[in-house]
Length: 396
Ligand SMILES: *Cc1c(COP(=O)(O)O)cnc(C)c1O
Image 1 (cartoon, helix red, strand yellow):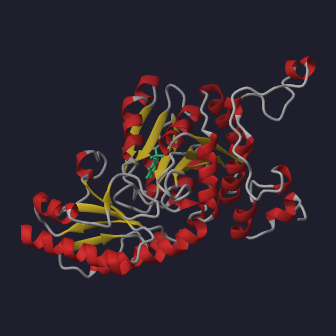
Image 2: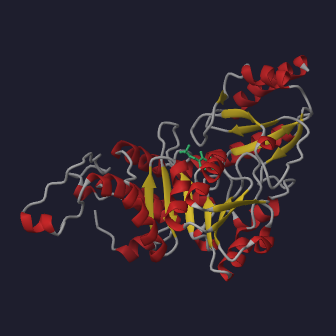
């Protein structure tokens, strides 16, 4: 097999790069995949090398070939200056705040932020002297009105967790960069395959690799990508200082998931859309929240900026009791009820974002439910839900 030079590799199309990134059979006894390298201690050949730490790897906490293989694959999708991995998607969200925010800074956070990240912003950041303001995810260029002299960064997540508001990322980036303010984004919903965060000027792009990257609900992992070498260096400094590291098996499994990311999304995108359309026809459903539906308020922005949709969306039911919702959901055989998503299996959960929103009050009248569509046959999923709706009606 001929070895490609860096420019030759860079010229390849994304799907090809995803099949090749991070592996070199001549480094792994000819086997296709890089081996799982576990370890804490790294042995140096002699005193001189040890004294100057002259080694590709110096100690387990500073990385390993297995982790580097994963980072190479993520970097080829993100297209930034460098990527770091950490032990959960949540840590991938919190790590950049530790890297870039200082005591006295002001941090703007979308009201649609992933809830555990809000928890971090509420419980941890004030202890370090960082002031947090939540803003309406649909604010767009209006974000400029919330800037203070000490605003250091804007946290975005588009579409937002559970309620899936599509943010005008280019408008937010333009306003923020005009004032030297950083933009960070949780891009888990779209993955870099469907939203090119760095190309839109996002400085720090975060991915809960637990979801579609790993893809099989068996790994917790997060990645953080930096747009410029300077941002990467600052992020790396914090990563090094904190002792953030991931297990080799988790790096391996995530890389294995990434090899099939494009085909899984290619299957799950239309599956999610078909289920969303099917649900939109149901009399029990008041509204389907899916940015790829032309009726969705976020559709125009989604169409302008995104190149695809994953299979995670929400619905609002017509007003009905939670007892009736439970009757529907508890009897489902093909939709597990649980947090997380992005695996091969379908999931469902009820949510109530009114409990914690502070900058906006979503006007839902009926109960809200989030669906993740897996790789099952859609006719089976529809039959399962159809029976669920019958239970809902019987219990209302
Ligand atoms: C799940 C999720 C995370 C956190 O990932 P974990 O690996 O579960 O900690 C972060 N952001 C979003 C949008 C998520 O859905």
